Image 1 (tube, rainbow, N blue to C red):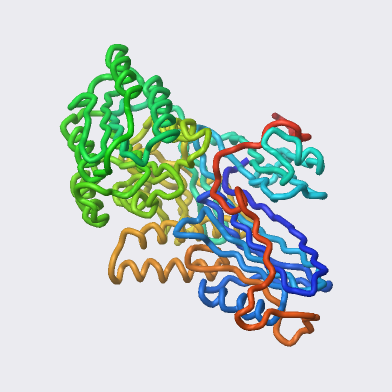
Image 2 (cartoon, rainbow, N blue to C red):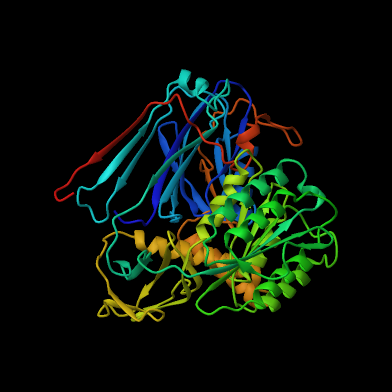
Length: 555
């Protein structure tokens, strides 16, 4: 099997016998790699396809359809990320409408596995709730597996995390693929290629890591308790050849030690005592704390090692330098591209845009830690992803290719994966080269569909949106323009676009009553988890599960 992406379709039927218009709004928290790309409905025996338009134009078309009393649907991205989408469905009086939303997901390899996570949160027991998954090889060689999930109405109310409102969890499928023993796997299709690079036989690199922990007053209660628990787990996982430091901060800074030390038994025990006694207090001086972490790493150079700075905070800066752009500029100048900064934002009200921009400016990523019972596991899980660096300063160089996605990576970690896509300018070149390892890999497959091209388009759009976040002036507008053009061309729902499906004007709408100007339509609005971001909860017991596998020769 090749780890390119997954595709899923969700058919949903709404039937209302009222004489008034009904509006259903749902908010789905997906993954950062998901792009809805098909949305259509069945009504009166006809199929109406959704169309991706600029966000304002799509909203206008949907609003006009609602004002005419017609059935309509709208899928839009919430916020700046690609992980949360809002679906608005309007059902006309005396109508039964089936909407089907199809999305693609570029699965991201973490800790040596791909995780396909399907949110099962219909907010009510569903008579016919079925999920079936096919994990298939590309190209087809009869290798693969089916996964079936068919809970009854009663089981939807009686499972471990269920209630009268039905399921409130996730179906999680974890898998990995058989890999080419070389340093990569390249697929080509219609003038495009995608390269998956995930070597695992490399020797790990010792790391220098500084943890910068927010202990301001807003971290009180469960946040602080879970942070302490996570730190104790993380300290247990440090290798003896690693060097580390701990900083806590509110309006002032507290050092465990003023310089990095080796992760030997004595130092780890001392660090655990320090972590166990972290308590919330005061305001938040992010600027001073992060710059101190940078200073500690800069003062501790080690050859053949990888340096990492990890910030955990739950709020905006309220002490010291509070201008967000000034903080970002200070941190960027201090780090000077020497190592990555990873920002972990704790809770729903954290200024995630600020953390994301600061991470992207420093070759890192930002991750939201959801305030839930498993927050300590989320923190530990993130650390495990970056715990074992294998390569630093990786540059991917390709012959006969153009319009490449990101090719420079500050670090590569064990269990992860580097994915690069691009357009092929010369099909005679079947070779690629890593400048960091001086290794050459031959292209080993050609696909016949547009799948590879869509992977390239998705990665390009995602990276353009990230650039737009950190650029300014004409460069910022140009990146935004390119992202919009590709989103429209490939029918991607992004922060710049929405997908709308309406009945063409002129067709009979059979409306008995439509809202008058200024009148609020009757609404049904799911609440609780239906309108919240992913909380990390899982569905466990009480469900029938079935996994079958198709066998093929030689397996």
